[in-house]
Length: 162
Image 1 (cartoon, rainbow, N blue to C red):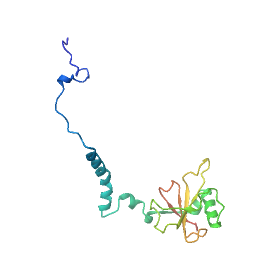
Image 2 (cartoon, helix red, strand yellow):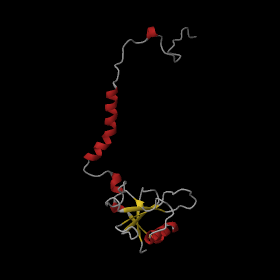
Image 3 (cartoon, rainbow, N blue to C red):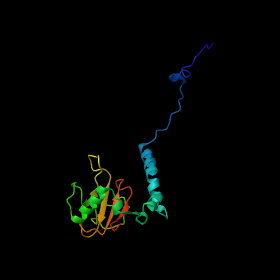
Image 4 (tube, one colour):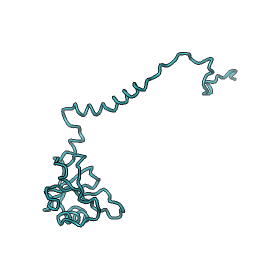
């Protein structure tokens, strides 16, 4: 049988008289902010000092965009492509607005070169993820068009001849 049980054995803090009198040095807010900033900036600095681009940029460069025949797009995509070349009408107010290419997955062009159009997804009440992005000097006569089914995560170049 146990004669004496200490408060620590029960998971309780020790009485004040038994606690260590050594004081911890307070950590300044400035030190915490500095460490947090360095942790946050380390990957950014590393990306700028590399000789080669990060793997994600290599895998998604414009040179690796696959080609999809127009005939293999979903029927809704084929219809939107036709409407683009006819100058409309379009189903959504955002159709025909400038696509900024912020993801930089398409070939780099001046702002305003690319325009985006919604490819409706049957069964959805919102715009969904499917888009056609076209680029060119004349909006209804684009030089090139791309299809994305995953909201700009990847693109396929549309071949209108096939």
